[in-house]
Amino acid sequence: MKKYLIVIEETSTGFSAYSPDLPGCVATGATRAEVEKNMREAISFHLDGLRKDGEPAPEPRTYSTYVELPA
Image (cartoon, helix red, strand yellow):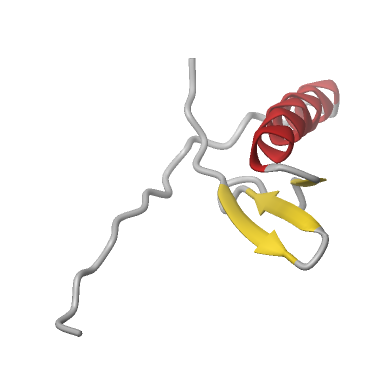
């Protein structure tokens, strides 16, 4: 099983998400839970398409962290 980082951003109409390791793989949703569900489906669809085209699934390589700065 592979874990892909997704970045979720709040928009004026809900939420959007993308995965830095899967260019072009995006999703939207009215709630955070919905965008996470939609992104899970989008990643699965994206990886299936790569397999059908004979291309390997990219290895997850992106990570995230927070940087604390004095106020």
